[in-house]
Length: 218
Image: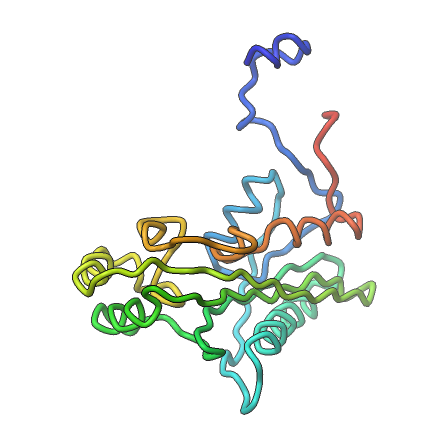
């Protein structure tokens, strides 16, 4: 607050100011509340249009190829309906020994997944696509974060699974919630583990003049 007053900006809370603002219409092809929250916190305005695609890997497909293919398919589905808008899509998976771990079916399944990750490194991989059908633009990227879990007991896994937090999350944990206490270290983007590699996505939007820094105001 002191710095704001010295600069003549007044005592406006930083949380009330946007960091970025739209220059063009944006559609998020994802129902993920975590992805939406990240972009909203940056100050972006967008419309949500979820897309339905077959989210099954094909034989021999690597996790990286899978998430990028999913991101493209989700973006294309929405872009065809809204050719004048910029569409952002993404798909995130948790991989252990190059095998994709899905969401647990129930608490027992969550415990099994958590114990498989205990004391080991795994990868969280997101493919994202920024596209504009009308301009023929399609940018596809993948981002990988290496996460290492602390070694924990079966009782700890059961206690975490019992909170219910793991049931709607790939790999059976949420790093942004109680599951963060299971994480010993990460190498790479934290926001990617949550579900959206924010830095990388924003850089693409800036590069294509979809958004701009929201300062000065006006």
